[in-house]
Length: 525
Ligand code: C2E
Ligand code: MG
Ligand code: MG
Image (cartoon, rainbow, N blue to C red; front, top):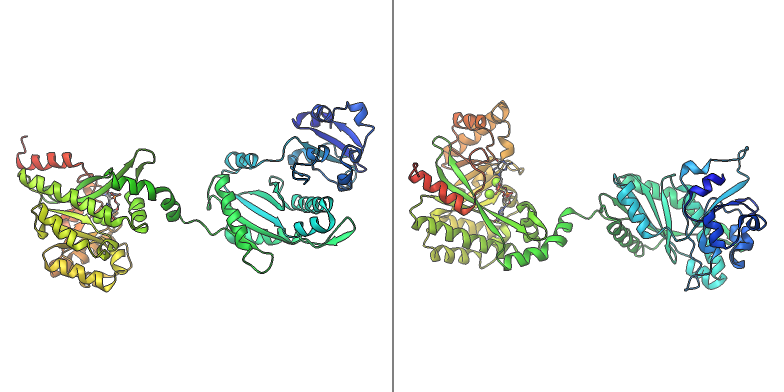
């Protein structure tokens, strides 16, 4: 047992069930200023401040060094509790069902938030649950019965908490009426609710504190890793928010942090840097050629926005376009894309390069902006282009949610000669009849519909049907995500004429597209 105590770096002592010191490690002796021979003649009660001595009665397994030291500045006795490693608990147990002694670990410090932070990152990488507990009667008890009663109550709850936690769970007092408990392992919402219910039931049974019967009640706010975050500080924020949520409830209760949606996290992270990037024109454009499958000629290019932030690194358009839409920046982003793309197309026209059309992705939120269509027309005029050169790409999903005024505006633009493409066809829940709701001139088949086109007969049959319908209605089909030459061959044999994808060409910088277009005019160059 002494050897075990010496392995504990912090002050630790072993006492019998009367609180008499049986053994202590060097750190304990140094801390108490007494040598072991003297300590053995003392009881822990004597070593502690008088008003907390009763708390030690029956204490099991945990104790704070603060109990031995002086009260904290605010008058409260900071009580920190720590669980000894499960393996240590049984070592040296005397015979019999109940140990005749208790092992006390005296902490130099509380189990700090930094300790919990380290636990989350080093030990609980696979997931954890953080419970932020608030003992509701503490102020009342402090006011009526004094600090000692207050501390006795919280210590009793701490003991119950300790008994209820798994061996590799940890807890600490966060201060005042708050305790934090950390449980290892990822848990679903239902499992957490169940666990919290059982925990609260075990913490809330009546207890006697300085001869007063108190029925503790607690609120608990809970967060979960990795769903609510993987860093302790983020988990603590989420659990604290959930705890605040319990204050809105009429009864003591348990709230589990609403999962922070990834889109909300992204918004918080990207909104400001994106605004800056748009304002300072730090975005870039890539152009992905759309190829005539038969000849390999570039007939058009889709304009794709790129953002490589100096601090955050390269961001996926799927993410930052979502953020731009959610933070009303999509109009300014779209305007910038349009301006730069039209400028490039005009430049290539002047250079005699033959790029028939360019496709620009359009968010329905842009179309809702009352100035969007006039801006579009003015930009077109500024760069001496005609509407037939521009393909406005709208995703299938966005069309499903489109309001009537937006749809009317798109019809109007189509009448003026703009091409209209249904993008990512096959990702929404719409059928082919959707193609008739707006005057589409083009349908871009999502890559998921052709991912196995070279060997999957169902995909072949489906694409065949779309191609037949499109041919019958005069709608151009462009297939997205062509990654293998076998796909290209099958597409050709199904009657598909235009494609886009890594096998045909990755998205290119304007200079690289220029070179490609140049090589089409003068192949020898
Ligand atoms: P999208 O309009 O469907 O664009 C095609 C996406 O497929 C691009 O992704 C392109 O890089 C990718 N892609 C092309 N060929 C292949 C292939 O063979 N295999 C695979 N796996 N992917 C391929 P990207 O650039 O990440 O853009 C994602 C989406 O972001 C675009 O999908 C578009 O909806 C949106 N987006 C991009 N730029 C803009 C923009 O300026 N405005 C708006 N509103 N949306 C944009
Ligand atoms: Mg597109
Ligand atoms: Mg697409």
